Structures are given as structure tokens and as C-alpha cells.
Amino acid sequence: MSTLSDLVSAQGRSSESDIEWLHRLAGDGQLLADLASADIVVWVPTADESFVAVAHTRPGGAATLFYRDIVGGRVRPQWQAQVRDAFQSVRIVDSSSPEWFEETPTRVRAVPIAIHEDGGLHAIGVLTRHTNLGDVRTPSRQQITFNDCADDLFGMIATGDFPDLSAPTGPRRGAPRAADGLIRLDVDGIVTFASPNALSAFNRIGFADELEGESLTEVTAQILPASWDTDERLPILTSGRQPWRSDVEARGVTVSLRAIPLKDHGHRTGAIVLCRDVSELRSQEQELITKDATIREIHHRVKNNLQTVASLLRIQARRTSSDEARESLLQAMQRVAAIAVVHDTLSEGLAQNVDFDEVFARVLRLVAEVAAAQNTVAHTRTTGKFGTLPSAYATPLALALTEIVTNAVEHGLAGREGDVEIVAERDDDVLEVRVRDTGSGLPDGQVGRGLGTQIVRTLIQGELSGTIDWSSIDEPETPFHGGTQVTISVPLRWLRG
Image: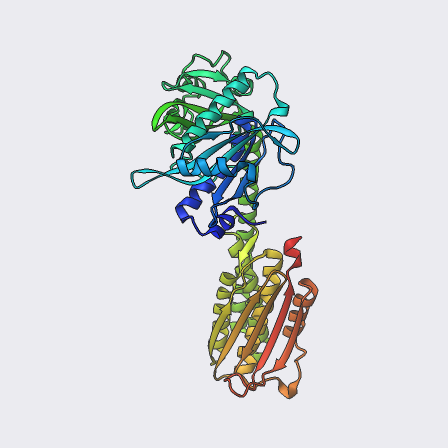
């Protein structure tokens, strides 16, 4: 499915700032739909003077009109003139009489999506509200207030006052919605309406009286313990003066708040404050943070232990008189160090995924140490990107590539100067890595059967379900002619699972 950015960009008539504005507005589509009890559709103009839908939100507590997705479709003929009029005049246009949509009576409101530009208002799109008149019931006080709030926001959209780009972006999990609890404030921050859910939320954090007629700032100050680390902008939020989000915590309960100032042609008239009891969600987040910290600490300790083992192997290798034993110990040290690199990377982030390009760069530094010990000058070069891989891939792949590149240096170049090139190519299905050198090639054209080769086969074929192939390079026009190429192919289907 195309994203809003793709759909808007395809029309070729919107700037990056326009797309950001539309993104912000679409992000509040659910709020608008729930307040208005109607479907909300965002349209942008096309080159042929028509309009295409780039976002659609269905109401949470009312019947929807559109059972099929209309995003990407053109505006219907019965709405065309109304939408165009709203766009060109930069004013709200209501349908003059109920219209029928698939045998359902509806009322349509077209709201220009306006921005301030060059000292005036300029429409970049149109928002339409589609109300299902077949589902009309006697409105409650809450529904009347919700509709009034929706009308206020529609008016702000038409005058370029909503959305507010200075408001915090990227809401945390559990951001409050209209149905979770809504408080209406006047210009002085006095509560004129509080939904039952909003009142329940404040009751749970210690306010036992009615909210209506009270200053929300004073109510919040009474609730919070004196020792609580207060968000400095909380009074601004609870008075409705600026758009902000914060949490209020008392008596073991956490209530998330979001303020939306209401304006009439730029002059503040009051505010909407959304609230939601997010105690369980915040507890889950804290548990996840604790678990992540624990996992990172485990990786850090494993890394430290592996580095200790590698150091012991290095010390033992230095004290060994046998050249064969020394080489074996150094190879074991290098394998342990390669695994430690992966755990070190995992200890630095929350996700159990690693940037393998960073890991492999550190692995190559280990190989450089081997080259120096062998009186070999190895020029390594990496092209392409490995990308991000889970640790289940990263550890065996890092160890396998360590073996392959080390083998190219130790045996391919063998005490002389040469090049080793590593090429990584990746798509959605396969990661392919080619390691080739300017060395002496495969002895007698045959792959060795040493421990390193066995380790590589076990890791690639056994743990990664991949394939590996050794071949001589027959490219007379390149410096790699006569050298060895090792090709690894690893399926990435697990990543989609």
C-alpha cells in the first residue's frame, strides 16, 4: 500500500513542508473522526484539477460510510464541486442538503487544509467529513461537546491554526484518545466539561470531587506529591495555553495528558485536554526497559569473558615453542575475539539486532593483526552493505567471514603484499557475500579440509542454511586473476518470519 508521502508526491504539486503538514493532520485523523462521529478523508489536488484521497479514518464509536478503502481513489463526482469550492475559496463548504451514498443519507462538510504563506492563507488540500445520517440518535451532552470540539478544530484547520507543528511529535505508546477521556477548558483554564472517563481517570489519581468549574492546573497541583519530579511545562498543559503531552503520576496510577489549544482566527478561546489511564502500559514499558538493560548487561559480561579467554589464548601462544601450536592458539584467539565483537555491539543497543557493517569493520581489524604477524601486507576493501542482522545471523556470519578472510591473508597472500576484496549484496530474500584475493589460488584447484574449512561449512550450511562455494578466479583483465573467490549465499526468509 502506498504511503501518504508517496500519494502526495505523485501529484507533483506539494512541497516537503506541505507533506509534513498533511502528515500531522492525518496523524490526528482518528481524533477528528471520533469527535465528529464521522468518516474523515484528506484530499490533495491533481494536475487535471481533480482530487485524490491520501488518508481516510473511520470513527471509533459510530457507523462508517466507507466499507472499502478509498485511499488512492479520485473524488466522486457528487463531491467534486464542493471540494473544489472549499479548496479555491479557502473556506468551509457544507452540503446544502443530505446526499445519498450507497443508499445511506449523508451530510458532507468540506474543510480547506490551509497554511499561512506570503502573508495570506493558501490551501494545500481539503478535508471532508462524511456523517452517516442513518445512524443519527438523540445526542448526549458528551456528543454535543465532542461535535463542538470537532467544529472548533475544523475551523482551525481552515485558518491554518491546526495542526500545530510546534507540538511534540511521535506520541508514546498509549497516547490518549477522545474516548479515553476529554476535558474542555475555557480561556482561563477552567473546566467546562469533563467526560465520565476523564473524571474516572482523575478520581483514580486522588481527586474525588467534580472537575467542572475547577481550575485544572490547581486540581493537578493538589494531586501531585510534593516530592514528585514535575514536568516544568505541566502547568502550561493543564491551562491549555500550549500544545504539550505529559504524564501525571499519583497513588500508583499514571494518567497521560495531551493539550490542544483552541483558537478562533489565531486568538485562543480555550483548550481540549485528552487524558488516559496508562498505568499498565507504563508498567509494561518499565519492565521492557529493565529487561533490555539486563540483556545488554549480559552481552557486556559475555563480551568481557570472551575477551579474557582471547587474552589467555594470546598469552599461551606467546609462551609456546611449537610453531604449529602457536598458530592454532592464535586462530582460536581470533575466533573468540570475533564472537566478542558481536556481543560488544549487542551490548550497546536496545534491539537484539546489529549493524553488521560495523561488526565486520571491527572483524577486519582483527585480520589486520594476523597479517602483520605473518609479515603480510593485506589491502582489504569492502563494497556494498550487509545491513542490519539479528544476533542469530551475526555471530555465525562474523565467525565464518573471519575464517575466510584470515585464510585469504594467511594462505592466499602468504608473506607478500596483495588485495582482499569483500563484496556484499543483499535483497529481500538473500544476502550474498563474495571474498576474493590476489593470492596464489587454490592449491591443485582443491578446497582444503582443515579445521577452518570445517568451521565455515558448519556455520554457513548448518546454522544459516546457506551455501558456500570456493573457486579460482579466471579474469585475465583484473589483478584478481589466478586468485581465490569464496561465495556465500544466506537466505533471509527468517527475517520475515
